[in-house]
Amino acid sequence: MRYLFIVQGEGRGHLTQAIALSGMLRRNGHEVVEVLLGESNVREIPGFFKEKIGAVVHTFATPSFKYKKNNKQVDLLNSIFFNAEIRQLNKYQKSIRFIYERISVQKPDSVINFYEILSGLTRFLYALKVPFIHIGHQFLLNHPDYRFGKGNRHDLRLLRLHVLLNNVGATRNLALSFYPLRDYPDEQITVVPPLLRKEVLEAQPSEGDYILVYMLNPGYEEEIREWHRRNPRVRLYCFWDKKQAPEEWVIDDYLTFFTIDDAKFIRYMAGCKGYVSTAGFESICEAFYLDKPVMVIPSHVEQEVNAQDAASTGYGIASSRFDIDKLIAFIDRRPPANSLFRSWADSAETVFLRLLAAH
Image 1 (cartoon, rainbow, N blue to C red):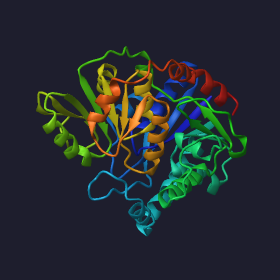
Image 2: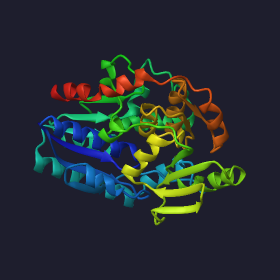
Image 3: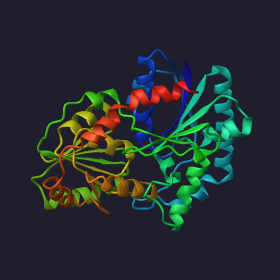
């Protein structure tokens, strides 16, 4: 079958999920004819994506987050005002037209959408008949058995609205999960394992002498450097998405910052003794699969939900800041290896091929 991918470019997780599924499909005789990538105005698309996705990539303008002055937390209200400006709306209208034109040219058997909000709106506005399969961890918020994100505070209501808009036009929602849950046909939800890349599945974990850090927002740099000043003999390797930063910035023998590099990140993940992240679903799954203790520091409400979910498994903890002392203490009391998670993640190729064949 011929598939067209539409991918949200905000954050690393959607990109690596698309790479993983593209590889699964190609290994089993299917084709990814084209990839349409929503390009954020605050993120650079890492070079590894175009190298690994195995298809022609076109970009388009898409709604994106605005961040508070500390460059750590998402400013949801400012994000709404920014994306609702006439100039921005005109860009998104052109993007919707562009998505429609590319689908019309390629005529795929199915469109697979990795949580890009303009994808379903395109299907709805142009009454497209091709199936749209939407993939995202966020769809679990609409599942009655999901225990997290049940509050009614303002930010959570905005998150639920965002999930609702991403649900528009979906033939089926594939909800990525840390663990199995029953399907929920009322919301067209099928619960599926995480999509981990072949390089992660084949990595050989070991326990090195360093902590690995992934921070989506460079505003956390000062917190890391302050902790390092108080703990100068704990080795930290940090990956970040800071524009115009050098590929490798060595502060001293015990603190180094790297820009995002796919192969290097997996190598450092496999060898770390603990992992600190800003609570993106995908990298938490990678750490769980490689049996790494995890500490998550959420920067917005969606990541707060992810953090609660990850901590509930017993294999991670949540924190409001980069206090790595908490992770070091957790390393000594973490439970045995999570074999159930590995089995669940290993079933992904079989599960996805079966589900996609049904459309």
